[in-house]
Image (tube, rainbow, N blue to C red; front, side):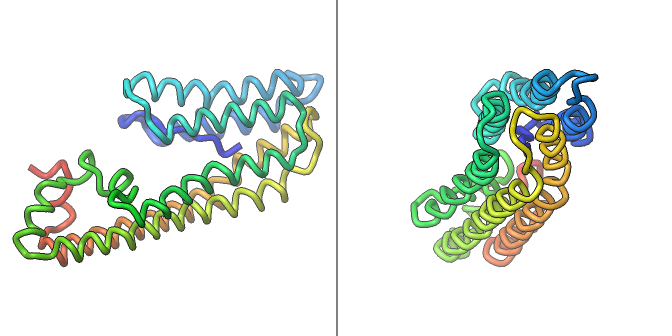
Amino acid sequence: MNDTAASPKTANPLIEALITLIIPSLILMKLSGPEDLGVVNALLLALAFPLFWGARSLLRERKVNLFATLGLVSVLLTGGIGLLQLDTQWLAVKEAAIPGLIGLAVAISAYTRYPLVRVILFSPTLMDVERIQSHLDARGTRATFEARLKTATWMLAGSFLFSSVMNYFLATWIVTSPTGTAAFNEELGRLTLLSYPVIALPSMLIMMAALYYLARTIRELAGLKLTEAMRTHP
């Protein structure tokens, strides 16, 4: 399912994982039999948890969050594939399409004036952008910094494209039973559980490498440590 939507900034990551990953997976794997909730009811209940969490995130933030919105769309698409009993190939396509489209957008943005690394890593909510830019201008390194932002953008694109490829292969490998069956629900639950260690963690490591590269660039070109460049620095 791999449908974890972005959560509120103050959310406990363990609670988020429990609601969007562990509970839905257990419902699908343990309660899909005819003697339990049944295939449809188990699928609806499992999808309700990440759907509720994503909607809660959007309402609490009071603004449209791209990743939260994509998470909700992903949940709804998974539910539609299961409830309409479409071919399981569509599930693999869906799993790959969302991170793949994000990665493609990030890669294309590297050739524009506004690379998406500015939204994800080098954003005013995370970094003290004005302070960094003033230090860059004082040192005459602004152009070099912009060039390195493009490199960081490619690193980010790589994390999403890696996730897209792995999502597709994991989905085709695990989910082989027809939709509308208890076996499909159980396999979907296993896919959801395995997607975190197999896909999310490596993608996170690539993103952390991009953040480290950005922090090193800021230190070299602006003369600021990461703690000095972060928005929380007084």
